[in-house]
Image 1: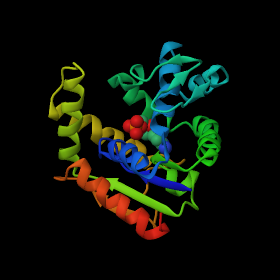
Image 2: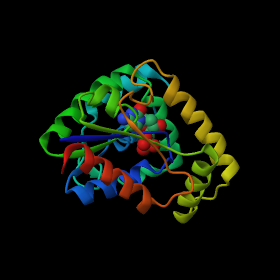
Image 3: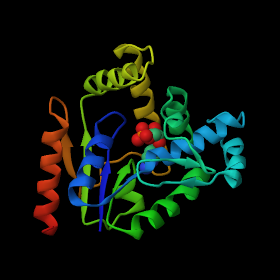
Length: 217
Ligand code: DC
């Protein structure tokens, strides 16, 4: 069974998706990390992430694997490397390249169908798993998201401010929602969850209750 969780950057969806998967005994698939791995591969090859043909040319040499809680790029563990701010920006750019989506979407379907999975991203309930029996759209006020992203980056030693993260998020939201292929959209049949002012634990309680109520698991 697939549970999808879509939503904008820094909405808290990653944290709650991972925790929900653990409570249900499901695998967790972080599809954003797959776009990040492609961006990292492009950047390492000196390709600009907004140059579609240059990014497409990198794809034959990209092999992404998603073992639990890790991201492997051609066998190398890049779990930490894909969290760098330049890779975040690049991921949202390569995600607008149709060839990249055509490359990753079938891989996501294959991974998701291997076992019960909570799959998190932007298009999981709309494009990748449109028949998923439970879908969530997790969001939060953009200022709350900017504050969270700032704290997360500072904890990892990155020097930033809430204002800078706000500008970055507004730009990423615009790109993620505005692209033609697989844009960030709320699936019409999704349960909408606003995480502003709530703890991750409270949100996960709600998600778990919805899943158990809908499918009796
Ligand atoms: O969830 P994240 O911030 O790690 O995602 C990184 C980028 O990847 C994000 O800006 C949009 C893109 N993405 C996407 O287009 N489709 C997905 N299913 C997941 C992420």
